[in-house]
Image (cartoon, rainbow, N blue to C red; front, side):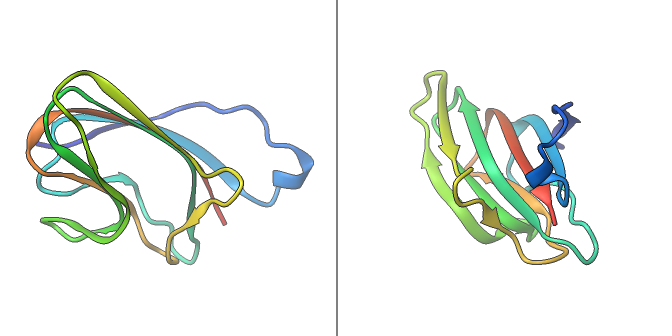
Length: 126
């Protein structure tokens, strides 16, 4: 089942952030297996992940990664993150040291099975 991703508006960047293209995405799905793209790759540029929230109400694991390998993420960045089946949110704050994906690589998510998952991710492209 496909992931529904919605771009989220963000405030104007500070002067120190002007060189970056900031973005935020809220993605949701009832079945993230197989792997789904959250933020598309940008040719010649890298995605940086600053902040991530994963919300899940199913007893599954969720993995955030670089690259959509079809059945799984190509490179694991975070996870697999376990969820117990109760509505739970897990937050990852990397603003001090953002995770850099390789140039022209998409941000993707995979889950161990069907289940309702919502992901909010904020970052920038450079």
